[in-house]
Image (cartoon, rainbow, N blue to C red; front, side, top):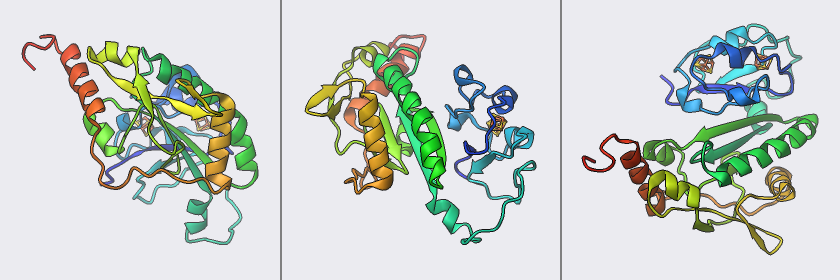
Length: 251
Ligand code: SF4
Ligand code: SF4
């Protein structure tokens, strides 16, 4: 069985009919963005479910972790290109991941989410035009276990093909996440043009994403010797206490 399973949308052929968003009862897709299919909670996707992919009239949905013979039933046949083994497809795929702590209360996560949506809406057609398949995922770091699975260092995080667009982690106190967890929590700030932003400007995100794809950006890799930062551990501990009916007496 695959350890990870969630849908990937080929936005170059998606017609934005919204059937996939309507079909999924597990809130994997962001209903607020319908009919555009934006995967918001990949961890809620049911392992080996092909429900939305079977329904998609454009054959635009495939799955991360696919290990069956399933193929999108409605996909138009494509002319075979070099790389029939599939390696060419992998090289030409750009995966943008937005990882965040909270999209209900945290102004920093919500604001960054909105700016990133705008940037992706503008960049995706251009990146697709030069032959890349663009996959845009949003994942809530709901628990410490999920944060560890994603090697999450700071909220929010934007990755291009697994690499953080920021060269390092800079943070300041986040009132919203401190309120959620009832403890002092720091969240990410973005440095651009000699200024510091809690919500990154559009031009910064556009430049950084394009630079990661086409340029020679230095990459900040969180792969090695990952340990959940103490700051995030305190956030999750505090959030668990706040969510528990005992409000901290039993846990
Ligand atoms: S595969 Fe199933 S559970 Fe996953 S997003 Fe599609 S309909 Fe929802
Ligand atoms: S069902 Fe297919 S074509 Fe319709 S919105 Fe979803 S991915 Fe796009």
